[in-house]
Structures are given as structure tokens and as C-alpha cells.
Length: 163
Ligand code: DLZ
Image 1 (tube, helix red, strand yellow):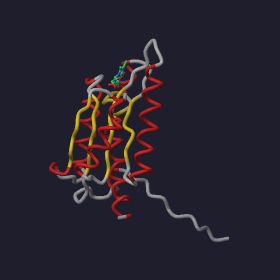
Image 2 (tube, helix red, strand yellow):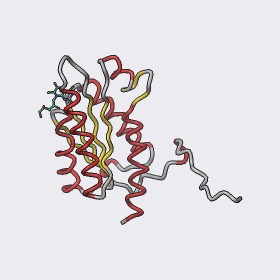
Image 3 (tube, helix red, strand yellow):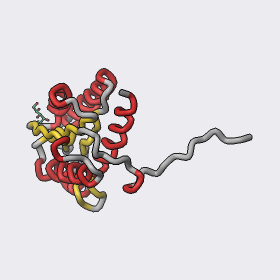
Image 4 (cartoon, helix red, strand yellow):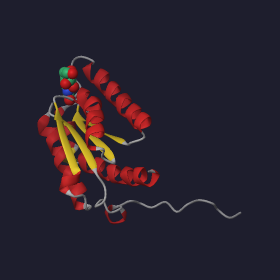
């Protein structure tokens, strides 16, 4: 029987769509700034590397990860970007604050994506300790801000094709 499967593309660096016509919002939390500002750098540089124009990348800083959904909504309404990337880092501590924040933010961002029809990208690290965060912000596990940017470009393409 003939297969109806689509050949899935690998979306490595060379197969990503050109980001030149796309517009982006980035919200970055300042809590754990040594980590989140590195995520931001990786994200921003990756968007530009793939053709995004600097004037089409709108950035907002917020105090902590908990503020990402509210600020993302404000940024989306103000600048009308194709996609909003939200970057933060919540490190596990002695209390359950990380669970409350991470659950609220992941739920908040998916709710925004569904209710607005615009993609909101979850670029939040949820490490057990500071070293795990460093490992994912330019360390041995790469920079998750780069991955968030790649996801944003793919989702911006999908969003633009739906308009
Ligand atoms: C309060 C708090 C704590 C304890 N830890 C973090 C964290 O690890 N990462 C982070 O981004 N934010 C943290 N915050 C701050 C909250 O996200 C938020 O800014 C405050 O609760 C005010 O709403």
C-alpha cells in the first residue's frame, strides 16, 4: 500500500524559513539575570542570523518569570508581532515556589496562544540548581534561547500563513 506520509523536514539551520519579513516580541525576566540575559542573547542573535531585522524585534524586560504572560499579552497588543518569545529561569529552592510559578506561566502562555491565535513560546528554564541553568544558557547543553528562537521562526511562518 502506498504511504501517505509527508516527508518531514529536519529544520536544521539551513532549512529554516527566512525571518526577514517576520516580526518578533521577546519578553525576558530579570530574576536570575546571569542566565536569562544569556538566553536573550542567544535568542536575539539567532533571529538576526536568520534574517530578522533588528527594528522588527521588540523587547520588554520584566522582574520575574511570573510576569511573562501578562507582559507578553501587553507586548502582543502593542506591537502586534507574529510571535512572542518568553524567556525566564526558575531555580528550585527550599519551597514550592518553582512549581507555582512554572505551572502558572506554562498554563498562562498556552492559554494566550490559544485565545489570541498567536504563538507564545515557552523559553523558561526549570532547573534543580544554578549549574543546570548554566549548562542550558550557553554551557554543555547549548543555549535554550537559541532553541526558542528557532521555534519562534517556525511558528511565525505558520502564523503568517494562517492570516
Ligand atoms: C519570588 C521568586 C522566586 C522565589 N524565585 C524566582 C525564580 O527562581 N525565577 C524567577 O524568574 N522569578 C522568581 N521569583 C519572582 C517571581 O517570578 C515574581 O517576579 C514575583 O513573585 C512577583 O510577582
